[in-house]
Length: 463
Image (cartoon, rainbow, N blue to C red; front, top):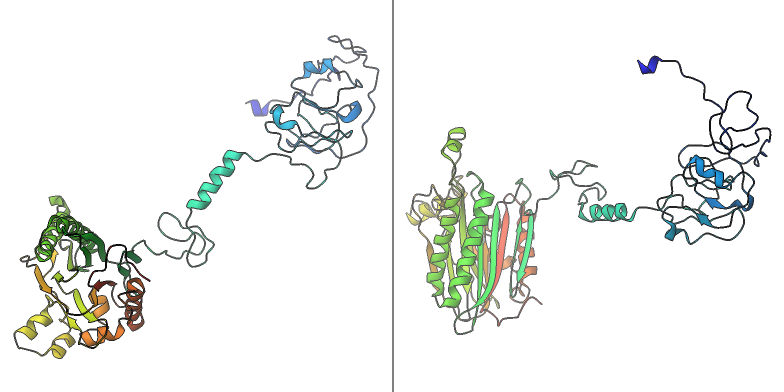
């Protein structure tokens, strides 16, 4: 094997042209160099190189800097011959204009493409350019940074997410900090949106591992030019498959249907009914799985969610719902009583309606929140509920999931939590309501939309 062959001693070479010499030669057979002439030794300074080579070389007068590209070109500059000050043969020459005129020094900062640049004076052999004097800190940039590498690093730094816990580690693709391992919040863990004069906030809560609620907001105009405000809130059914996808699909389909139908002259109550049907179709479509999917997971239910929505115009308030998400009316001056505008599709509501329990007893039962109506392919029958109202005074409509009303169930309790300036500051009010639920324990996802009545003119927003 080659690795086992004895190594031969290197033959001596001519100091002028580097051609191999025979033992006893007095003159170089290639260039005729007098081998009896011993070149003067350089000053005793350490040699600093970039490529690890530290071979001594003949010193040049004037300390000029040049690049020796191959051994044979050294014939053009025999030892001891003076060279013109400056930089010759340096690749990337346009960047080398900063060479200082003082003997034995040169400024090579910004020189790109130079192989083996070092600080000092003199010329090395084929190792490239070097200087034979001690380096002076911060005087010379030994290698200019590649601007492309710097640009790529800047892009990575901007795109990388920083951990919300330690504020130092980078977040990997799985959503965990590479430094402390902390799981990062998902995009839907906390959402806020303000659209003109209406706003909504949704939060994962303190007990659930993800947010399965979703909402949709929008502002449009009726054919006569008067404004119309739309708010949809959906709560995914946790016992179903993909409840977060169900609520998102339903809220998007319902809000888009309303915003398209109202400008065409469809009555708001009819538009709400159509929006709930469209939301139902969107959720049903999520159950379109291959037959083999149910064979592997027969226990899983089809994606499902509840829905509650509101349409507010200059003089009309319309609500629609399926399930146990609710809408409340809270007058601005609080001189008249608030009201709950929806009736739950739930076991507790059925017990109360049938006269078998009073409301306190029914909602204290562990079966209280078992819903009897929902959107989903396995729903018994879709029964969209709609109702319209004409309030005689200004106020706000609170559209929410049970993650909020569990902590303010009665209308009076809800009114006590809603800030007095809710009409003027809907986003602030929505944050306050979500905070109330979190302070109460945050056992469920919490989503609330605040809609002022009557609908203000287009362009009005939060103060």
